Image (cartoon, rainbow, N blue to C red):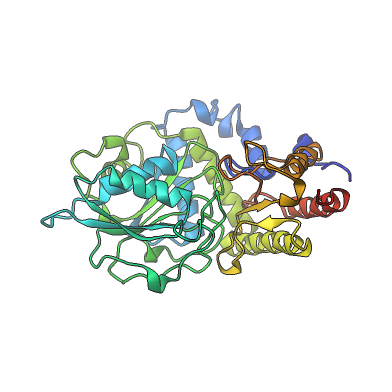
Length: 389
């Protein structure tokens, strides 16, 4: 099998994040690197207060608003610290309700990242009670999402938090859950952000680290309904204070200027090619091809998540247990060989998450269908040449 032949000797990058970016976006950034639109400066050198940069920033916000059809009663913030910082940012900004007694916050745990979010909220137990609505670790090892009829929601909770897609184990809400109309729904969409159309009005807060589907590491996107601003606790740091950031158009302090610029180019790239309906069609086609290849292997490649209703389009962890005993990194000899031989062909970053082992295929928006086709051909060849031990 011949190695990938891509412009600039690039590889097909299956990293779970920071992830591959569209070639067109990188080329535009390259062309504008030394002197952005005759300003005499690179974007990364500009004052964030300058008109030329404020225009870049505003364009990025407007392009995102257009992509997601974000209503006017929502603010778009570009912050820092990744989704992990928002695990603290959410309770710090939404717990001052004015009611007597400690409010309850609901957390739906379907994987490692939603558990980390719940654990972070528990650090603020002086200000809230954390109710675990459901924890799919119990009895299911994060391999599925329990039916919503089994969940234990709190009437009048200050907010309900969940993650649409779990990057590590590949569980996804392909059908979004339903909640009471007055519920404040907070959603971590980091690993499937901008992969499909959504109704933003169903959410109080959406947040996402940009480095998977929307840009480079360093920019964190928060979309918040305006009426939820001003609920922050007194201990909330200014840089994490959503209201203060909204009042200053995300420029309370120096933002991640260059990452936001790249995000804007990424948003425009999606719009240029047909918006989220186009992206969704592409992502579905890539996922269908990969899952079919795994099914055709007749058990040689074993999925972690076997329930089609909750299988991710973005992250697909799998194993080759036919390849012998696991090492201390949870890798079988066949899996080690798979990752090494794939890399030689230009199929890189396929090693699974360190605590889970095996192989993980991450196929975010910028990974092309050709990349998935080549991977699937390699998988078939590898199976034929490496029978079970």
